[in-house]
Length: 458
Image 1: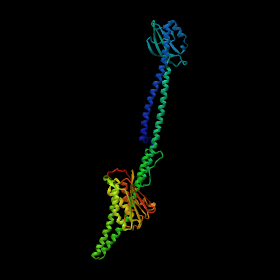
Image 2: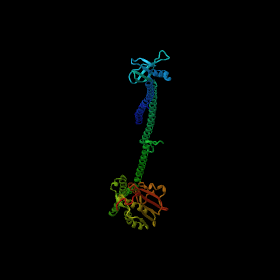
Image 3: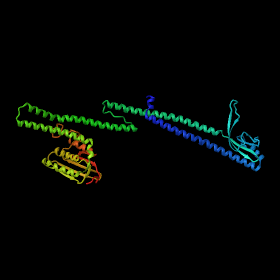
Image 4: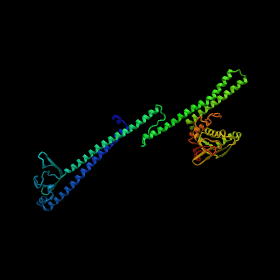
């Protein structure tokens, strides 16, 4: 992995930016520590000098010049401290140092000191407090303050080494993070290229760390799963269209060719034409159902949602299908709440109820009981159609919601296998759920949707 490639990554640039901000903060802290250290030590030194000067000045005021000289000469600290008394002419008349100026206040003086090496010149930095004495004398009290500069230098060296470590660790961390980022991007790129090449079962890698890239990869994998399901559905629909339409079109072709080859009477021609029209109507009905499912799944009908009394819809459909059920020796038992309002498409909800009840009537034996119920709670409503027929095996309950899927593989029963597909599309459009379960015996289908009582006007 080339360094310029790492440097160009966003993660490395962010690491460099954070490193720069940290260094600026680190330098600011270092300067503050340096100033506080030197300032505190300097104030402590000056406080000691000032206290010493005040003591000697009081000694002069009470006992005079000679007593002050004796006090200085007898001071145990004379070897490490600096004292000096200047007369009116600037001559040293007491103490051990007279190299200060006869000016009141603080003075800093560089004083050479003896060294063991003849080639090395050492010096010390004196902090001196100069105090005027009566009689035109000057008292100087000083101490070596070189250790203050050394302490400041130590602070500077410590922070310089800290800066070096910060830069090394920050740069190393930036390179490591960038390498990890690039490796993850390369794995995602490789997986994407495999998917583009045709391996639709391949998925993007997701690590255990679950960072932002992993979350994005997870979402993309969900999208790929959805696309894969749609492609599988399209393939299944294509196969089923070919299977379902091939038979009626072949029959239509055979009847028309037969009619054209034979010398038929007008009545026979009318019969052939009527059969052809019937077959074409069935084919057109299949295509209309497919177009209707596509229109529902597009979501365009959602813009026309209005308050709908689902209870009234269910009762009207039961009234319409009741005679059909009676002709087949079946009865629809109802338990429908009235004034159950929801926001939706009345026409599509009517078709949903119609398809579910029609399936129960058509696909059950004679004298089979059918129950239709509508129940609403404070947060959900459910429309249930349950029968006592043969039911649907659990392995096929999800598949029957696909287009053209039919349990009867020979497809001799009337229908095109799109009824439940339309119901599933209408359910998705309204944000509901469709559950198929065992009714013991028979099939129980439940259309459920979130609902709030009085959410829509009556």
